[in-house]
Length: 300
Image (cartoon, rainbow, N blue to C red):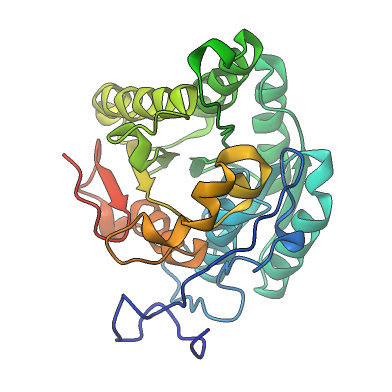
């Protein structure tokens, strides 16, 4: 991999990171990033903060690894206190992120929770507000993606679980967070390229990402009079634990670098700056927007 560079360095985006070229590997859900080969880059050595989120308080679901982990690191280095939500099996990854948040001189809080339960989502917000002293930024990032070739084999239980994780949980968390969000606060939801270009073996996942994209645009209009912005980040193929925990087939994993126009997979560290922009006052006139970060793959 090239020498680490921060997000402000000027270089060729096609070669900013090496191709992943992952060996075929499998983990049970939800997947642990530290056991992946190669380990994704969350910006631990590269992200440079400039105080863009000084004094803000953020809650990030799926903040232990991948895009959520990279966003947690970036937010902390920009001056925010951060609470992350993760599953019990992800404790090792979460501890690493909390350590980096605290190294940045910020408050870091890890909340172990299954977000597919409405009551637990309300507790998550309550716990985050208590730990951080309030809430200014909500990032709904946690996601479930399990590839199934044939619709006949897509279990009812998986279809429901994917929607509960990817759509219901953000809805519940937004409702719980709103009493704490003041004018200037932001909500950022994670969609996907799949919202526009659904893979045939990811019917449930792609449908949820289209739903969260649509939900966010409606919510942005409803919350605009309150001074609360709602936006979406839609990543393209990015090397995260989703891929090794059933998110793609073996053939797709072997060809993972070939999906994007850049002919290399994205790294979580490349996605996090989009969340920083949408969380910061630099995007004060941006709401209801979907920011596609996908290596040149054209979307509507």
